[in-house]
Amino acid sequence: MFSEEAVKIFDSGYNCAQAVLLAFSEKFNIDKDSAVKIASGFGGGMARMQETCGAVTGGIMIAGLAFTNIMEDNATNKERVYYIISQFIMRFKEKYGTIKCSELLNCDRNTEEGQRYYEKNNLQQNICRNCVEDVTRLLDDLTKKYNQ
Image: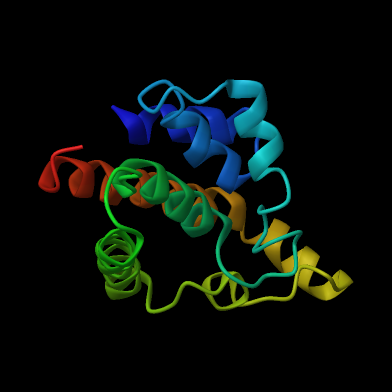
């Protein structure tokens, strides 16, 4: 299952975006070294700036791979891809209330106080790991729903 693989990858030290992308790399014929490089800057809400959750950005990358049909006209294709990604984001927001890393963690990891809070509350395991798992489950559901 993709979620189990993503969690295993995340637990081994890869960032949240890398874990999501790597979990689906075989299914979408992505070279693992390239996947690691492509997603390297998206962890921690994009370079630990705590903007959009890295797991979500990894999920958007996978959705683009899964649902973009290069044989279709661009306008139609774009609308379908945007629709599916919006469904993915809405489902994530239904569970977590936001896709913004700083709001998910409720701290600023770029301050000493925020970093202490992050570590004291084991947010990597209690929040980030769950986001990685849930994103991969959502993607798996969407790829099944849209026959990818």
